[in-house]
Image 1 (spheres, rainbow, N blue to C red):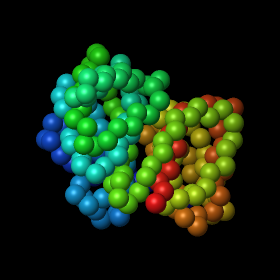
Image 2 (spheres, one colour):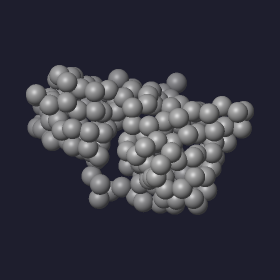
Image 3 (cartoon, rainbow, N blue to C red):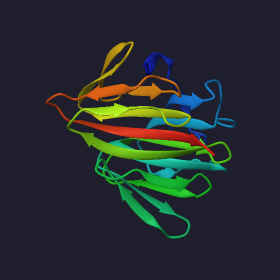
Image 4 (cartoon, rainbow, N blue to C red):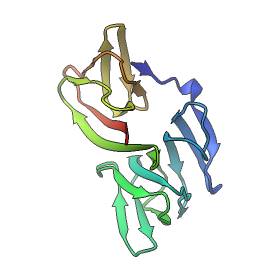
Length: 193
């Protein structure tokens, strides 16, 4: 169990230069935008505009704050996302144009290179304790709201909104305790094959 340290996050320009993103984690750890297998990042979108293109990459977007955003694709599809929406999956090849509803939003963006990994993202409101383990290549637990305590055989960490926890293969079972509170979280599983 590893609470990811914001001091290690990298802030970098978007691939298309339209803004900046905070890179939370990549696999492999030293990879860049051209050779990552998996990537978790958070960005603030402040203006309408196109999303960066990532050939060979599957993406999932989760809005974490703000009034919402509409994504329009070249095939005429349109989807509105806000802080109550389920994670939205799309391909990096699909040209997407973002229109803000009313002011800036923040998001969590999950990407996997299709030839190497797959990902599955679930948005959950926790109102009772839960056990976590890594069944694939990596599991990331992202706290969107509330507070909780994650415990394993080596100790415990308190997690609040904006915190990320990583579980790797072979890590001991983690028990997430919310007590009398509620917490909104993302469970992100990365698998090979």
